[in-house]
Length: 236
Image (cartoon, rainbow, N blue to C red):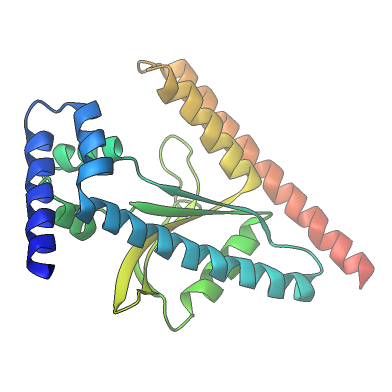
């Protein structure tokens, strides 16, 4: 039975790869990924488990730190798994092998956890506390708060490796964690709708306005954090 199961998995993986390579038919590829490719379904299940593990860690941190600071440093936590179409496009764009193994080896943001914080100081405090945990290994760190992207985008990105414990093995999975403040998340969400959802061509006026909005957003959150510090000092 084991040999038969292995043959079926291999055949399904080959069928998926052929569909990916021939014609770039999105519906066919998505359908094959979701219905026929057991290796793909298993890999996505592992990524979901890793997201759940990371989300649980931040829920624990939020609960513990709320006692220390008398407020919750985390406003909300969002998770997402890249779609089959998005994975396919990324593999093709980077001219990588179109296989399930290639997804796991080469794409670091298949699973994403977004942690929305109140203030910038909360971001760095949470990121440091999270990275110090002995079952977390930071693979990559990109600080777009200290060095924003040219369009004004700000966030702290960590790619981490975390273990998941299956019934017969332990697997190390990569998860991308994005830390944003409320204002960073608002700006990024609206910028995406304005720039990408409508297939907007390059427009210098709109780009300049978006950059100015990012600066205003940063100034507002800095001012609000100073107010929080004043309020905390009064209560002491």
